[in-house]
Length: 396
Image 1 (cartoon, rainbow, N blue to C red):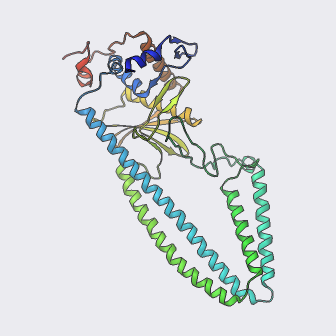
Image 2: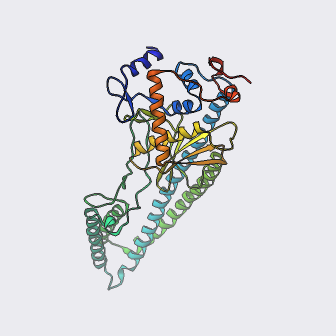
Image 3: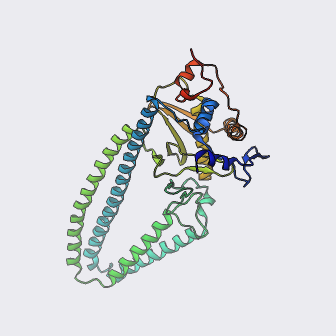
């Protein structure tokens, strides 16, 4: 089935509905991509030519594609190094915790000969402590105490997975979106209390059967020293990974502590979609800033004095898509020309109205046609990548 046939099937019997969206006979909104909106805002006639299959031509197009691939490679490298750093730090923290446990155990075993601190007495203390932590964790899981004290800003930074079409994962291991705890929901604090209760209970059991305590304490001290060396080696790996991360961050043009939730390579990432309006698209990146998902659009080529309206419209499309797919309000998007020229595009009511009007207009043109040039600028026509096929091109 050819592209024109698919387009005809999509718009067959399409009509404008009361909500301002054009839908076909099946009730599906006509599909409009963020790129459609960008091309239409640049020039409706250029958009129409693209819809007819007239691809953009010129060195700028090829250079832009290469630059976008380079940017994605830099972001991907940053993500990989960040992942390595986190894994290394997690391993180091666990190894360091083991060292602390060994040291504590060694001290306990050596001092067990004290009449007032018999193994049974210490085991009892640890057992009571474990029961206290267990009871506290159960209460914390059962009651929404965070909501009671107004501590609702502890939501963990979530991850987004776009590995398959329309499959978006927004749940963190311990603290999902909107997490406030209670009513059998557990967070990191509750999990930590449970783990601590288990560790103390196991130590209590071990102390009951402790024999030859001085020798056991010496062996534990030796093991603690050996494990300290291993933990130091792991820490060195973490420091090297952190240095590599800073270099990768500067190359990719990212701010300090920026977390990438999504990076488009047009192969392994799926489109964000909104079935209500028919909008779809892939932002260059989605970053997490102060717990908010922020879409980023990276533009290559010459840096303009102010953001182009067509580029701004594309960012507005991504803002809507991110908001729909995360079920969270998104305050703004970012439009970048290079690494230094950065613009913040607000997601306010005025911009929302502009986006929805543009979607409806593109859908109308899909059904009724009659796309016309929207400017009288010969220079703009000259720079258009589809001027070779334009029937109404302006000349200087």
